[in-house]
Image (cartoon, rainbow over all chains, first blue to last red; front, side, top):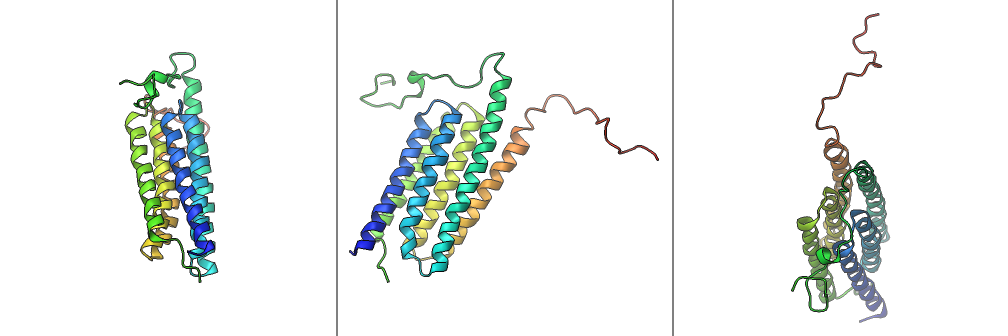
Length: 123
Length: 109
């Protein structure tokens, strides 16, 4: 296996690892606004690493640039969607601020994933 | 011409991405808010793009790259449509909107 292939494999595998990290953040963070952070930043970085790993295998320069364009488009699309969701969520959060809050409070017993080392989770 | 990434590595990456999507389903089931579910839809969009690109490399089908491009576009359109039409519309669901006194419609000359 050549050096470029090894580098490509490292990039693609770390991209997949970043996707996994982002999803763990999606599951364990307390609020929707915090989950947006994990989703847009980490997942887009993982996608970028995967694309950088796949780019040397593309047939021509045009195809490699198309892959890069896909990443740029997903970045812009995720930023737009995240802003829209966060804005709407923040507006609702402020509307409910006088009465009962509709946002989930930090509750380790509720949000913990079941497991052996986790004392907050249900057995 | 580089030999490229070995197919076993790409298969592992595709399996990890699929596991990511399955874990995202937990957030759809559990998410107490509508915002949690719609941002998991964004996860599906990004992970779908990555999965399509990896599968396009495994199966040597370059058309899947164009499908990934279209999926990215559809994801942002879906998000905008949902937030503007469904989510915002819930705020105005109760009372009918009063007619706008400042519009010029209906006024004779």
